[in-house]
Image (tube, rainbow, N blue to C red; front, side, top):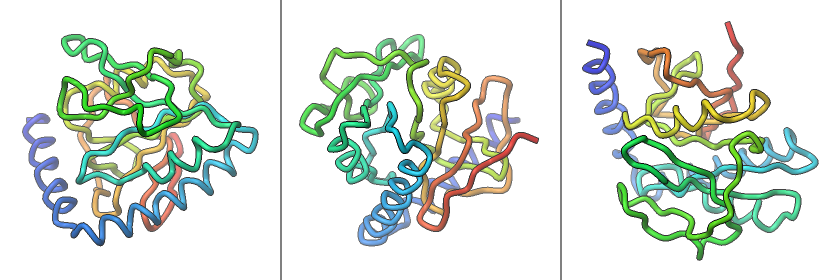
Amino acid sequence: MENTTKQILRERVRALRDHLSPKARAEKSSQICARALAEIHQEFPNGAKVLLFAPQPEEVDILSLFYELAQDPLFQCSFPKITDFQQKSMEAVCTQSEDKLRVGEFFGLREPTGSEFLVPQELDLVLVPALAIDRAGNRLGHGQGFYDRFLQRVSPRCRKWAVIFSCQKVEQIPVTPYDIPVDAALDECSFAPFFPS
């Protein structure tokens, strides 16, 4: 029943997100990146190790945020790389240039080509893609579980921020014990921290 509910929710939110025009998506992405940069500098004035993501065409384009952080020597940027598809395992690989991102083997995702891995416990911030986020910070992904497994390995001090369009916010997402919530959601309208109940 839960999987059916999640799938219906995925289809509904995906339709809303994909209905955005390219112009609207670009404008909203720019607003989100500006907001994210301000929040990151406020949260991490002394710099941070950050895991970003290479966006799919329909997702928030955070590459302008990456360009800003990559130019700042206080910030070390990394991107996910799938290392074991069967085990749903991914790692953070350091990169400071978009030129180092290439389409990988799975899902058409761009992945870093380097070999300098960051230990998950060293990360200060993970920017997480999502199909939907609810009022409690529960995240709905694509159902593969890569991020849930990875986020189990980061330090408790690591911040986990979902990056979404406002149309991807929902009231409630059904969860399992394996689902890892985020600490905050960034969209074009707000930065919304979540607090444990």
